Length: 163
Ligand SMILES: [Fe+2]
Ligand SMILES: [Fe+2]
Image (cartoon, rainbow, N blue to C red):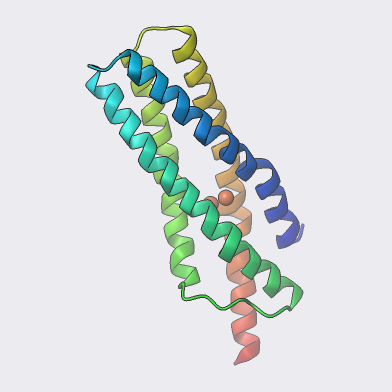
């Protein structure tokens, strides 16, 4: 498997699922929160979700605009688009974000399950959250175990060649 084929698969499966599901979950959380305006834990979960969503969206953008194209260019021997970003530092930070966002989603799902009674809306929200969490596990596994190590190797190779 080439770096290019792995990241194309990740974008078309996992990133597209997040782009579809994150706004959908947002709408469902807003609707549920409107039904329980005095539920403080639910409103905390809603605020936490907003933070996680923007973190994930910024993360996807860095992958799609910088990390993935840089890795593909290195693999093909094409010119790398210059970036101000410290790529190895960002990579390490991304692995922390994988853990942080995964844990936050689990916490959000747990809070909603514990603090609101079963209803069509709440169960639909939980089902969407579960779909995102399950997919996130597979997504992160591919990035942590394949994409990141391959990227580091490509970067090292290109630095060795240019020295
Ligand atoms: Fe990703
Ligand atoms: Fe990632």
